[in-house]
Length: 342
Figure 1 (tube, rainbow, N blue to C red):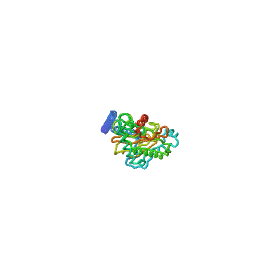
Figure 2 (cartoon, rainbow, N blue to C red; figure 1 turned 90 degrees about the vertical axis):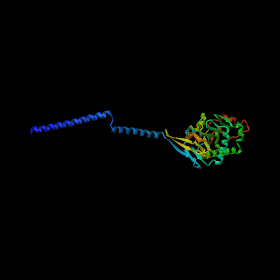
Figure 3 (cartoon, one colour; figure 1 turned 60 degrees about the horizontal axis):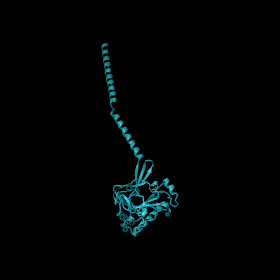
Figure 4 (spheres, one colour; figure 1 turned 180 degrees about the vertical axis):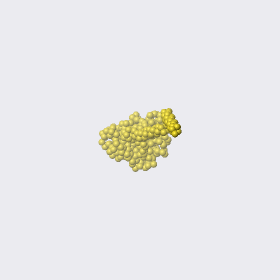
């Protein structure tokens, strides 16, 4: 009885020792595996953290550095009047406050398709095309200033009034329409910003522009850089543009774009698609930073008509003085090529 019982106890002990050995071996084996490489679960956790970090970085980037696009006027619209009020920049407001009757009720911008008629725009387009037959820039941004006589030719400027062929260009109809359109645009600026129209004066440079996709040859051809008109031309207080051709039909690219900053990094690009006879106007301070997109095809024609509140910078309507050799010469020397705002 005792021998039999002892044998049983001995077998149980041996069996227990085997289980303990297997457990110790298994534990040792597991420790060795963990030390050499991560498990599948650990790898999944590691990649999940990487994906999460990349996602957070992307969210931070796109919410911190955003550029949004917003339409102000499309080519297909026919606009009686569309406005966008803005706060005046402090330097602009400080300066313009000196000129009684010329202080805007609020800064901003407007666009209208009802100020100038398509027929008037067509006559001015004919005038522009005829003028640019006598000279064009080698770099795709050509200028015709009827006040100074400056005309792009290659990489330089010539005085159009010194060219014999110019005598055939300018008719009484051209002269009358040009002056009439300028007066209507001036009145529109006065009404939109609640100014005394007599306090507004035409200023230079006021000019026709012709833009193509030809590669720029000089800095004056690079019209697409963002800028503020008041910083480029000290005389400017109000800027207007009259478009003579249609975006998407006569040319591609070439939209006019306002750049509105919102905070340190966010900004909105507010664009105008040019349309024949469309007029846009805006206060010339830093509240209206802008640029023109590069033209990618076709030909874009427009007129920049600029106004000042300072009589010192006022200029008269062009006289189209083709018979007087002295007329126009002096003006050509004060002409500053408008390299950016067209």
